[in-house]
Structures are given as C-alpha cells and as structure tokens.
Image (cartoon, rainbow, N blue to C red; front, side, top):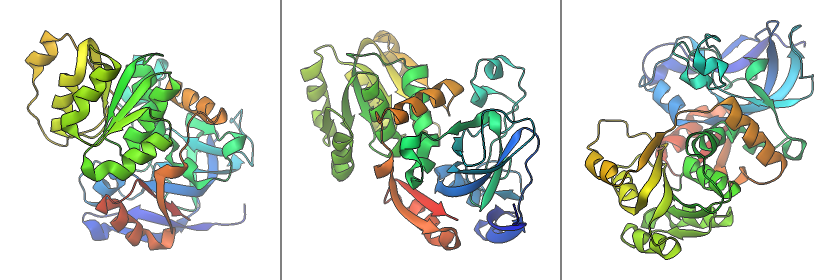
Length: 345
C-alpha cells in the first residue's frame, strides 16, 4: 500500500463545529487486524448524537460504524480473510474476551466494550483498521453494492428476531414503525416464516408500501384499525409485536394487540423515561424482550440470508454523498426524510 495520508471525518472537540474533515495518516493493521479500504459508510443516529455531544465518545475519533469495504492488507495472525475480500463488521471493537457475554458471542453485552466510531476510529474515512474477529465477508452475490453499508443495523434486527424473540414459522408478528430498523425487522420475521403486519401512521404510507414490496403480508397506516386487522389473522391477538419506533403510543398499542402469553420485542429507543402500563403486561403474561445491538449469531444468520437472497437492503439507502459533502449528508440524516444516508469516500 503506497498511500500514507487519507481523508477522515474526525470529532476532536465539543460542539458541532468539533467535527471536521481532516487529512490523517493511513492506519497500520496490527497482527489480528484487517486494513479495509472503505467503499461506503452509512450515517446512524449515533453519529448524529456524537456530533452534538449527546453520546459517549473518546476524542479525537473518526466517526462511522455502518460500513463495508475491500481488504487491502491483513495482519500476520489473521486467518480466513485475504486481500480482495469485501467485508463488513460488528461494532464491538474491544471487549474483555473473558466474561460470559464475550464467551457466548454476545459482545455488545460486555461491560468493558468500546465500539468502532466512538471508542475507536471508524469508517467515515478512506481506510479503517478493524479486528478480523468481528468481520464478516460480503456474499459474492452482493459484492460492490453500497447498500451493504447497512448490514450493521440489519444485524440488530436479526438479533431481535432470531436471538431475543425466537420468532417461529406461523407466528403472527406485528412490526411497529416502518423506519430502517422496522423494515429490517419485518424482513427478518418474514425469513423466519412469520405472517408479518407492518404498522405506522398516515404519513408513513410510502414506507408501508416499501414494506409490502419487501415481503410483508399486510400493513396498516391507521392505528385505530390495527387491532381489527390483527384479530382478522389471529383471533387471540399477535403472537409477537416488534416495537421499532421508540414511540410511547406504539408501545401501549403493542400491549393491547398482543395475545395473552405472547411477547413484545423492544428495539426502538425512547430517549427519555416513559410511563409504562406494567400491570397490563403482567395481567396478560406478555413477555418483554429487549434488544440492543447484535451478536455473532445474528451476523452469521444475516450473511446466510443475504447469500440466499432472502433479505434485501438496496431500498434502505435513500441517498449517497461523497465524503467531502458530509455536512449535506448529515443535514439530510438529521431531517429524518429518508432511511440511511451513505457517505462514499
């Protein structure tokens, strides 16, 4: 590799003006790391929060944890990857490696975890170094596609559906919130064999149409009509409700439409303390499963689904911007007008 300097979006000081595009040294991979030339990196809500100093970070740090790219160099200890492979990665860059969470593949639960893009340099740059142990090879049928930058949020949806909720074939599943995570969760539930209903509000109609295009069985843009739709397909209520919006009314509706003995999977974050009707949850014996991040198991399942063309990510990218136009890209991401916005170095 001849290049020694690269572009990188670095958060080095408090305030929104503390995030700047800089020229920095190209990192060198350690023995267990890969040097990856970034093809594309998506803007997550976490990146927006770091820019505003609303999320823990360790400056100076390069932002970005949703990415894919080409392996251009591998450390001497790396096995299973070669120059030319296209890879993406989990976010848990550093963990203790010894706790029960680490030993079982649930790295996000490690109390000592630090993540790429906040605790270690991320992928809003020309290059990134990343531990090979948390990388996954892009299936050949999805090589060179910038939408593969959104594998990370899709792995979170896979964690919710397969690890936390264990959705099964024949379940009637309602996904609340047709944003990027809701779209991904609906696809995962469908891949599990469920009958999938995606719900939103009237302004979400376009997003609900996309959910149908991606395989959902039914959708509802009228919260008042949702329960009737659910009971049409299961007279006892939904077997599982996956709450992906982080909206309090949606969570309360989830309890109402879930059958007795069913389950709610909570993926959306509320960002504040909320009032929660726990008595109703208890009286119906509804299990509440929460989900944060991903696991090795969910990543393996996701890559298999991509290889089988059982899920798709192309419609989850709303726009692409060159890295030099990062401010325009962040403005679009903050507006909430699309799904994922992608930066291309």
